[in-house]
Length: 208
Image (cartoon, rainbow, N blue to C red; front, side, top):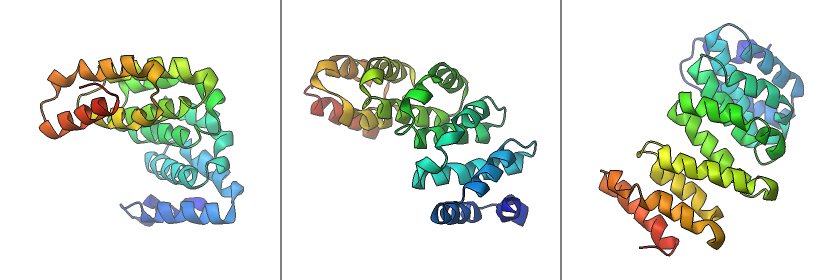
């Protein structure tokens, strides 16, 4: 049973057993074990929820197609009061955002609501999803607008990373609002290293 392979079941506090299990499942293309993990993710035991979502998003990082059919379950997990399960579910959704963009976009309001109440990691993965959506013509406009809103409102500590993540996808036709969102927050940045990272982004955009 998959349950017997999870870290918490074996009294482990590290993630190595979960990572090894994910690698093994990907190697074997073991869909049965993935369905077992989904059931454990929905269990009432917090430790099993945590381990299962870890294995699932590690599978998604290696082979997103193996978990793409469980979007509904991941969206539902976003609503959990278990913070680890919540941000883990957003991570899992991120891993399939390149192959299920339209389906995920239909749930964008749920994702946005979770981000407002969730952890930094939840927001990090949401930003990555928006950046991936910038490659999808029919999702570009809304995703870009959502990204700009995040740049305007996110914690200053995360702002340089988000700006750097999005930079490769920014084109001349939308560089102005992107650079303005960053430039308008420069005075908020107290740490010099983070300010320099933002200034470097602005320089690449052609703005001093």
